Length: 225
Image (tube, rainbow, N blue to C red; front, top):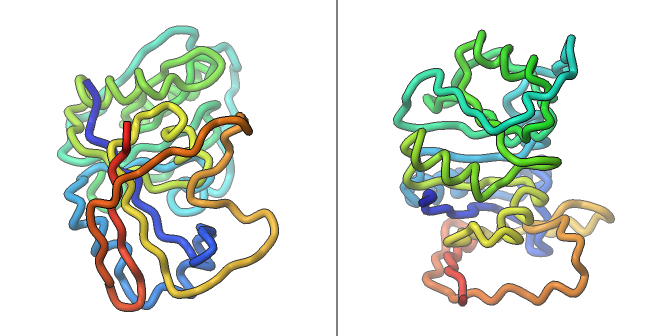
C-alpha cells in the first residue's frame, strides 16, 4: 500500500527547472492552480528544494553521530496534510513545524544520526527513518500511507528526487507544465535527473490531458507499464 503519487513540475521549453528561472518565465500563478486541481493535500520535496524554500540557512550538526541504526518513525501529530522533506543524512535544520498549513515530516535513512531524530521529536516534527545506505523510498511511501494516512502525494522536485521516484517505479502520474521561456544554461537540472544507468530504457507515457493555462501548457501523463 502506498499513496497515489503525482510528480508535478513546471519547466522551461528545454526542460530545465531552476526556480529563479521558472519564476521569470511563468506568466502568473498557473503552477499552483494546477497543483490545487490535482487534489494532493500533501507534497514532497528533496533536500536541496527544501533548503531553498523552507529550512533554516545553517545546517544541523549532530553532537553525536551514532546512527539510529534501524527502521523507526515518530508521529508528532496526525494532520490532514503534510510537507514531506527527503533529507537522507539529517542536514536540514528547522525553525517551523508546518508550512502552508502542512505539518512537516522528514524522511532519512537509518545511517542518519539518532541525535537528528531526537531533535525533530523535541521540536514536534514527525519523521521516518528507513533504508540502509540510502532511503528505502518504497518502504517510506508505504509508511506514509499506513501510519500517516496520506492517500495522495505530489512530488514537486528537484530533478534528482524526481529521478529517484521514477527509477523506483513509484510514480502513478506526471503533471508537467511548460512555461513560455528557454533556459539553455550548462548544467541546470532537468525535470527528471540523476539516474546513473546510461542503458536504462526510456519510460513510456500515455497522454491523459492537455490544457493551456495563460501562456503555459499543462499536460498530464500516466505510465505505460
